[in-house]
Image (cartoon, rainbow, N blue to C red; front, top):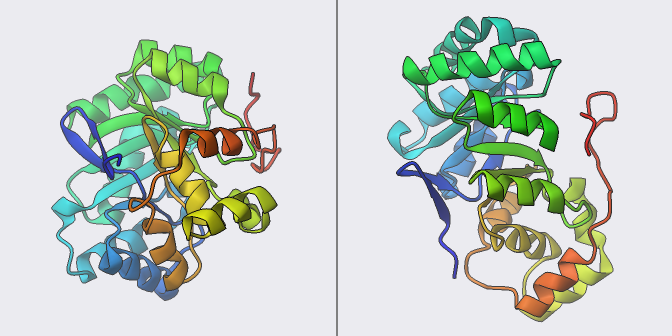
Length: 270
């Protein structure tokens, strides 16, 4: 069985995290606190989500020590040129001394990307974050990023219906990991007949098969969202079974180009 964490620069990163987009207000705090209670130790947020305060509050109210929770947050492109004060704002909202993984949320133009990457170096130097990375960068933008900052990952959409073969090859070349958002394809995996057949074979749900397929690949972290406590428990329970090589290939065969990211914001992928 694969371990349930990645080790990056001697830092353990839980391979299944909680995506928190739209988890706001008291219900958001309750959901995040519940996730921590059932065993989540990786919480993914962003300045654009407007819920860093809720994430920080949930961690403080939980029985889990802050040192045992891996926090990822992201800076929006409009703040790349003022990244340091933007990160200071995140630290205040999260009420933490350092972020575990800080990402540039979406690529901007080359000049803005360059400035953001340069300032990521300063954020690392100041101890504002332990690790740095990018999100939604295409392979060309990734080449610029690895030249300018010691990034460790790219967070992109990845699920059984979206092949990321080229991106994965590029990340491997640079010794980076991939964080998969929308790993359940906004619920589409639950009704897919191929995944449903595999789920019956393994005594799991189609969502668990999809998540297992992802984490069974090398250097992949997943951050599924979950609307209920039962779904949160389900998404975390993917380390007690293993897909056969043949079944891994069956899921790979579903990969087309079904990108669910809002095309208004989507980068130009190559």
